[in-house]
Image 1 (tube, rainbow, N blue to C red):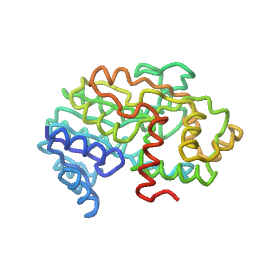
Image 2 (cartoon, rainbow, N blue to C red):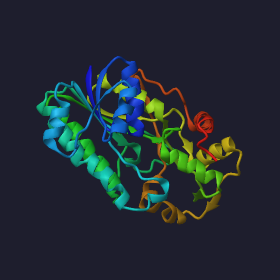
Image 3 (cartoon, rainbow, N blue to C red):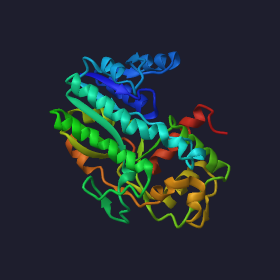
Length: 312
């Protein structure tokens, strides 16, 4: 299949390009610099430089492709998550950027459009398993509002006769993720805290598993699918397993109100309990995560970062 990937050099994009190349697809991916173009080539894809907010450029880039994948986000570092300005580009890529991509995909008669989204859009589920049919809630958050608005572009693509697929991902983690590196560094320096009791569930996905999921999604029926690992953990256990892997004390527990002071407005949804099920996606695609939870994943990530001498 001929595929266009918007966001090919991001954390998810790199893992996806590798998975698509291994599956034998012919891939064209965005790259904004010469260095990133070389990265795209090394992952088995053809680099293309395009302004994703320019409809004419996007249509030219999409021409001849059977599938269009929107994997474009710019998640800010942990230390900048409090800043609304740091999320502006991601919000635009999820909305206006998605609209332009879908316009181009429809105009060029693409068959499939895959839209990256997030499981944080679900309302707090307590200890219950959340499925694709569970209620969503933007909670007044511009980040969540843009995520849900962007998902509508996949439905618009389906309405035009294609297969629009929304993949709601859990929290990414892996040695490729700068947010993961930041969090581990903060944990080692005793700067990472646990606001509140930590009994809310956290759904995660190991980055290479996320990439293989995108590749597996290409033949799915139109619709929304959760891409998470098998065993979401309560936040307290999520942090404790990382601390145990690093052989450091678990984080200090602070009052829940300090969550907003640490993470800003995003704490309003990071603190929700999201015990998300991947059953629909597994059944429809045959995909299964190689890493079932962060309990197995943290040691893999820390070992990889230690081998690269990233951690100090």
